[in-house]
Image (cartoon, rainbow, N blue to C red; front, side, top):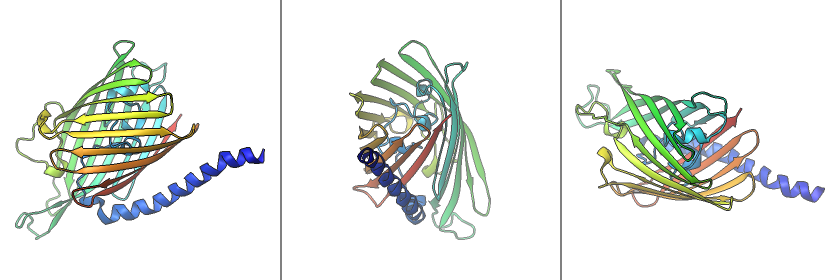
Length: 311
């Protein structure tokens, strides 16, 4: 009996200790460099962040409102999730249980960013302009056949400028997605982001401007212990001149412990990210950690931690 307890709980205690250290170092890294970072990664969960940012064809409650709303109907239950750091916060709740008439997911996202100002842009002579990005989104989804699901997400997206003018800009945006699951362990996704959005007057700074793009992705689970993910994200205006490629692997080391590794390459900016992460999937909660680091251009790095509760 003692040997069984030791083999079962020792890895768990080690994992919790590592997560505690990550919480400490996460705040330090956020405060040092994250507000100025320019990541190509979308508003992903830590689960997809650790796998190169790929998640179009995979099911994860924390990614529903940001990656592919069509996966909502495959979540099969009720979930609450939250993620946070010194510069960003997100929370959401989803309902896709068997008795619900229309599966739905409601989410809130907020991030603090800085924009470098050109000489003469600020009446007060400021070098940077603080910005607050907020996104309230509602996703709806349903099956159109036994293997095909569709979904839409409406966003109320706003950016406020914390300067002498205190201006703000708000737009309503729409995403639409498909998910085809021909097999239980195989899925293909297609999503269109910010459909029809055109910022002709350029009221949004480039750092936070919504982009009209599409993405395709897939996931494949091999014998319940190894999952492969791959996404291809277009450039702005659905252009394929500067796509972003995302690749990731998930290794189910134990029934409750998952290790992730991935890569993301942006052909437009030349940015290349290496990613890794750990996940704990228990019966009462799910805890995921991810780390991303620039390998070629600049010194960008990011830590993220998500917590999800089924109820």
